[in-house]
Image (cartoon, rainbow over all chains, first blue to last red):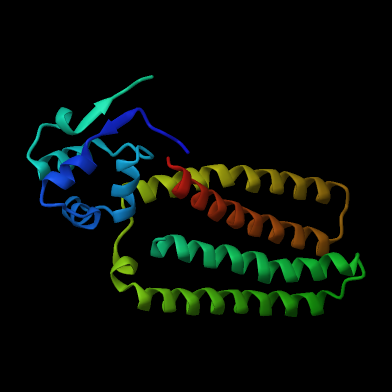
Length: 71
Length: 138
């Protein structure tokens, strides 16, 4: 399985936001549920725009949601 | 499994089963080909392929209307682009082989079927790549 260098806190943040489902988050940022799942698992790095939209949903800055791990 | 993934599986299996049957018949003819017979078989294969994929995709869409109406998102578009790009090598290689066959005076029946086989392989490879990238990640 391909793992990107971008890790994220989306699963934790969804839980903290009234156990938001992947589908709810997907609907709010305009992608499919499968794409939210792929982002959470680190199988896909979202575009900058999608990353900003995700951070905006949770009300946090981008770097609170996504982290870059080059190794 | 998403609607689009299921739809891709339907296309892949239909390509392999229907055109596989057609090309098995072509291979078994071993050059003793009756062009008219194979043109008829090819036409029937194309019609059957369209019918099978359209009907099964409609049934799938009825079962998951929301999924079916959702436009492709950025990940799905990227998967399609990468799969297309990878399958392009199959197409290019096949066309070079067909040119080689023409150069060595191959029968038109062989060249026509070779080109059609290349087109089918291009689609099969593209769909397979999409399915792999969807599961493995991009």
